[in-house]
Length: 106
Image (cartoon, rainbow, N blue to C red):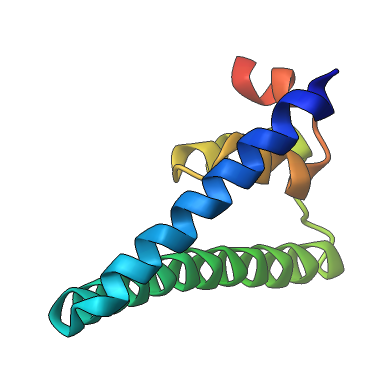
């Protein structure tokens, strides 16, 4: 049932996108602006991915060092610190292996 609804919707959205690009490509100035906006969007996505990669590297290095020195923190105390530094709940759950509900309750 859902497929019958979504398929025509997907086709119409795709058709609209092609029509939009066709119109934009007729005007060089408008097309340059479209490309500039796409570049900005791609750079934002890449910046987010880079930040997440650096967070993961920092965490993994620090945790491995603490663990090798026998002073690794408990997952709950680690989750509290990560939450304090505005790391997302999904990311904290991934790093500490704690359930999201427990992290939210901290």
